[in-house]
Image 1: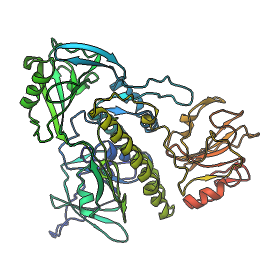
Image 2 (image 1 turned 90 degrees about the vertical axis):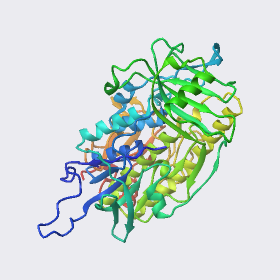
Image 3 (image 1 turned 180 degrees about the vertical axis):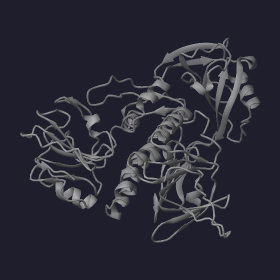
Image 4 (image 1 turned 60 degrees about the horizontal axis):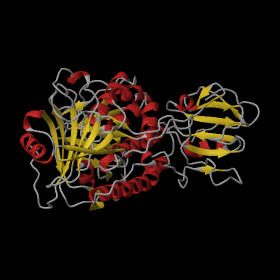
Length: 532
């Protein structure tokens, strides 16, 4: 579930500073509404990722958050390999890796007695094509801190304490009203304000879903004393506890803001066997639960800084767009926490939408924005099914090994209206337009570095003479002189979000494709990349 926060992006365009309410004229008239291109509501991982992406594109954006600060809990604590690739492109992966760790082994307990150990994760070694092969354990609060730091590097800031209460649209934009009486006029609005989205409610968009498990759950961050009997080398589980399963996962070392606090932090996830139980989400309630169901005693618990109770649901918004307003993240889809898919899917919503918003604001046809819903609804629906299946298997006591489908590397847009595959006679396992563009180090180039940034990339693989280098804002070129098994051979237009948009045996047709998608001409002609 996404946190709700507020951020404004200043991107060198003269619109990134100030609180946004302005000062009224001397006559006493009400202040003019703040104007921006994109209003992002909610500064959780979704909103922050979108704000970073827009900031690096020079797009005017305002990110607002009803809370007084960034969400403080560990909630969405896993980053899948595909999300790590997104964060590499956004320039924050080194900081994310420094703030996190690999997932630990599981250790099963019966009361005070430790038992069998097993690995819930399917371990994979990095390859040339997949440099980040495993999930990464990092509390949601730390992921947000890293994204927020990157946003500030790009000139942005978060406007906290901005609670949305009204939203009106017309043919030119939308006007948002806040509880303090201020208004914001934006050409587009993105709802990243979580599962209880105010924006979704104001739009009247329903959600279709189901209760994944009727048994209540309680999640909490728990800091243990130094002498607590649970080492931070394992993810501890009490599957046979009388009142319901408890899992206790060690979290990475504290951020600088938390240094000096006693003991290490864990995330507790407890399920209640009684469907009618009412979880006690107070710190005292968490301490009592742990003392009853685990090997911990009350004196081992130094602090309970965050708690949340819920029943696992899976739900999908009936649509992801209403006029000039878009839903992203938990505002669009609600996942069971099982499998660690919700935050990842949310960040990738932002990554899909960001380049499209920037392109349309720069003159691309409005229909490009229709492809956000077209591409992301099937993805979200599929991942909801995965999360639900894993949750139910775990709830029934079946061990589920988290395998390749969890990594989100197989997500593709082959059926999208943006996708053009023009090469005949491809084998079943060939890379096709719509697929994720793999990494590689060939011809003195790392492909992820060639793709990195807000541009499209024209990649040629074993096609003869290299195309002239193009360093324009719209498109850049990269060349691999020999066949590379990840791509075969051919010419590939890689979208700004790292998916192959167009593929051909030669560059013929690439220019027409870009002209259709972006209303830009002259990008590629007669096999040459021309200056913009």
